[in-house]
Image (cartoon, rainbow, N blue to C red):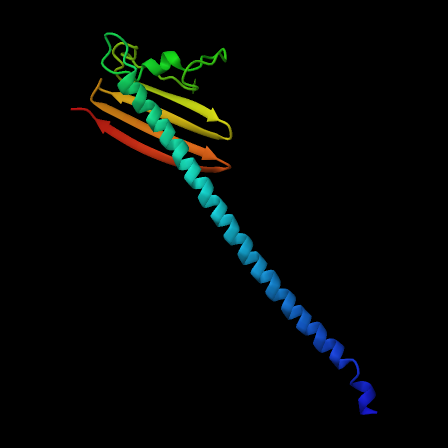
Length: 161
């Protein structure tokens, strides 16, 4: 009579073993998924960093290489070369989103100027704020690169001699 009562025990033991195996497999899956997500975000972070670096390089290039005639520096030339509010694209693929014209912020002197521009290239973008304080002596650049929901920011300051 004892033998008939113990017939269902093996089924219960098998069920508990299957549950333990299932819990272990699900735990490993969650850990692997989290690891993959972290690795993907690291890749996006690198792309975002280089997008931000592109914004800094664009400002530095225009500041040094595109100097208007009778101008101390070329940063304010970007104001004239970016896309205007009408949506007409110009040569440097940027849109000035919030120009801040100070009292001396004109293309020839570029003193106390600050403006923000955004550039979108495929699925990457960067938003850069460039400021010139006291004429040619201080340049402050803040650039944020964005890619797939990940953003990285670079802040740099340059003092001229």
